[in-house]
Amino acid sequence: MGRDRTLRLQFGNRIEVVCVVGTRLCTDVYGAAPADAVTFAVKHSDDVEVEIISDGQSEHAPANGGKQWPLDPKTTLSIQMTRPSTEANDNKVTVGYYGENGGHPIDQAGVFLTGIEISLDVDADRDGVVEKNHPKKAVWTWGPDGQGAVLLVNCDKENPYTGKEDCQDDKVFSKDDLEDMSRMILRTKGPDRLPPGYEMVLYIPLSDCDKVGVFYLQNPFFGQRYIHVLGPRKLFHVVKYTGGSAEMEFFVEGLRFPDAGFDGLVTINVSLLEPVAEGIPQTPIFTDTVVFRIAPWIMTPNTLAPVNVFVCSVKDNYLFLKEIKNLVSKANCKMSVCSRYMNRGDRWMQGPDFGYVSREPLFEEVTSLDSFGNLEVSPPVTANGKEYPLGRILIGSSFPLSAGRRMTKVVRDFLYAQKVQSPIELYSDWLTVGHVDEFVTFVPIPGKKQFRMLMASPSACYKLFREKQKEGHGEAVMFKGYTGTDTKRVTVNKVLSNEVMVQENQYVQRCIDWNRDILKKELGLAEKDIIDLPALFKMDKQGKAMAYFPNMVNMIVLSRDLGIPKPFGPIIEAECCLEQHVCSLLEPLGLTCTFIDDVSSYHKQLGEVHCGTNVHRKPSAFKWWNVTP
Ligand SMILES: [Ca+2]
Ligand SMILES: [Ca+2]
Ligand SMILES: [Ca+2]
Image (cartoon, rainbow, N blue to C red):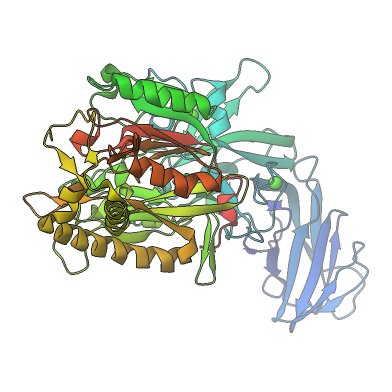
């Protein structure tokens, strides 16, 4: 806001000053007084307010100059404009000095004033409308009682065929792109023109120039043009003062997500510059500031409704695609197949209105822990008295004290910096691939605002197999119709008598239990919230675990419809006992299980259904700025 400025009274010279409404000019009356003066009086025009301040007491000076005050070194005048001027210098303050005998003034000093209103405005109360001069527009606070404007990173592409994201150039190619930006309005009110030498400047701090971009809408009524005025290499922009009541409309885009060393806040200022004298730089006499917080990168949990399922079409997944297609049509959402040509192997899908971000480390080696399968997000939870209305991010990491793989620091720093889905670090390094989604997922309970956490469980599998053995199905055969390389005849008895496998799975169960305890504590879950899905693992040569049969927990969740990797379990009475068991756990909750053969397309390459798909979900109705991190 405006600073108080000091003004020096002079005799004989015409002083002209611009005063922003709401700011003060202070002047000393004693220093300028003629030698034989003992009192002074003040005359001023209607749109000016003058206070006589002496010894901490202040008194309004009447406009007509009818009162005299004793001259005292401690006395100052405080002058402010109460409304904007209609013409330059249309207001005046005159100080008259009087000698012992009063009567006529010995001398007079006058100041001509031009009032102007300036307000840089944003939607600080977050109701979708840019209000006028919100008192806390420069302070950003979280929570339902907080305030402060928000900004999106414009990281989508309005045109999917362009090479870069929208925010990477200084152009606006389509009006739809403005929907991704926040409005900012510069409101001014004053005379037709400012006295010579005054200038209005919009500017950003150097530290924000790679984080925010601003466009100005030129000629709103005749052939609109969007001029890039602030951003990288554009730290300031001189704003043309147009006079009268003016509203200049700007569009602001975020260029970067919050990250290590960047809390997500960006600042935009407007200043009024005043000339001091010919050849001397102008100085700011008034600054108005607004703050935006750049929206965090947010993950959508399985419990949110699906909108579109993205699947990559690769060489050998034709049948898999067909099965996913059936599931998607049951779940009533869209499906986009990304061709091999477009996905270049395994690229995260990009397209219109589908933003993306990538973080690449400068020095660290990228490991498989960095890929997206290693990031999951829980449904909304309350844990240890704290609410997480957008859920919590689960990231796979190495066991404490072990020197294993660890999600690259830049990715971890990035996730922590988003603040609204406070990450939980899980131990996933015991797996060959090392992904969180190999042992945990979440399913909604249709019709209720509840969910269950599903975990891969070797003990549940052994328990089921022993039951089947006792019931006389020890010779039931697994892997029937399985297109994998294991062609040996595998029975329930064979699995149960394999001591190495028993030991390896005990180890795996302990690793899962370690995570299970963390998840229960950090998500505030009870035993009844967790369902164990039978799974078996085997160790690779490096002592890391991989699924022995397709890992059912690695499923795709489309509302009530679950696409579960087909486990190829022991066939008992013409039915797979694993499928039958899982259905008996999930279907009473209102869920529908579809088992999808992903063996040749994904399982053999150590991924399952979930890894081969990406689901674009309806965003949470909960507004992220209402989170209290
Ligand atoms: Ca508003
Ligand atoms: Ca652009
Ligand atoms: Ca855009």
